[in-house]
Image (spheres, rainbow, N blue to C red):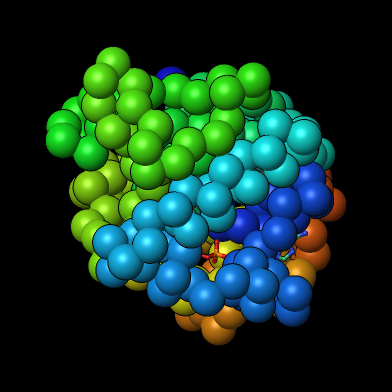
Length: 234
Ligand code: APR
């Protein structure tokens, strides 16, 4: 039985793939008014603007590639049962080959029927753009994204994963947005916690900080984990 390694990732995980984060200088929320393009009220007010915002991000995503950090997390599946909980809506963890990926804020390459949220459709690289008039199987669609002001349906399974973790890792998130930012509180006492981020948010002293980017940081994490595994084997 491999130890359960649960990893919570944010926008910083995809920064080295050339995908903008939200709150770094020049990030998405410097470029766009967040409540106009990523909130339920904004979508109700001007759905065309919201569709355009996600169309643009889809084009950027299909041009991007998983980075060394994504691939390093796949390598860890050799020695650990790896479960990824991501705030990211990109599909770079899946494209890197990660086996278990749970999206908290939705998925950029998917849209869903406005009249039935259970009808979810995957867009393809040759068919990325939607408008308020786009229909699939006769249904008008919206981005399959959790907008601000909307519930985060996957938070319960995410909490369960964190409660079962033997090791918990946070990568590339400013820990600004709840409930995702609150996952740390569900880690059992005594379970090691690592946080990979070049400019980490304040965290409790129990957290082992790796102050660097995801690509380099996942490499350091792998070394730290193999050292601690080696000690346990003694
Ligand atoms: N490697 C790792 N981390 C990085 C890198 C990098 N190369 N570059 C930047 N970071 C870190 C930043 O230091 C910051 O802590 O990534 C984090 C990005 O923070 P945010 O832009 O706030 O992104 P995130 O925490 O994922 O935002 C959470 O907010 O707007 C909503 O729904 C959106 O899911 C998003 C949520």
